Image (tube, rainbow, N blue to C red; front, side):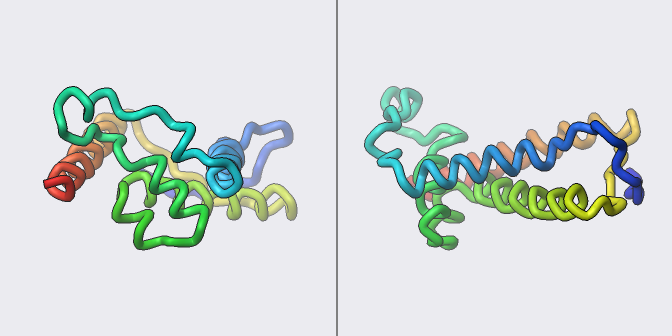
Length: 136
């Protein structure tokens, strides 16, 4: 893995802006719409009685949109961390684009991609274990 300082090319698509923008829109929706009443119940939980790996995401989003950070983290830690990371990247890339500055880019080699995938799977499993432990 290498961290490079690169100048943004004209017309280059900004994934950081896209993902951060999606999180901002979700936060606005959670703040001003009754998402808890509109969201369906978890089918996995209704059949097994156990939370699924994504249980608590809607409540975490609603708590985060209201500024209740600890409650949001407690509902689904992985989702909370990802939202905060995407918002940080969004603000960072917004400054980069607005002021035409060079920005940091993470370059992952081909042999490191499998480790990145394995890390993502481990994080999801650890988060699910947390949700299962918090449920009981």
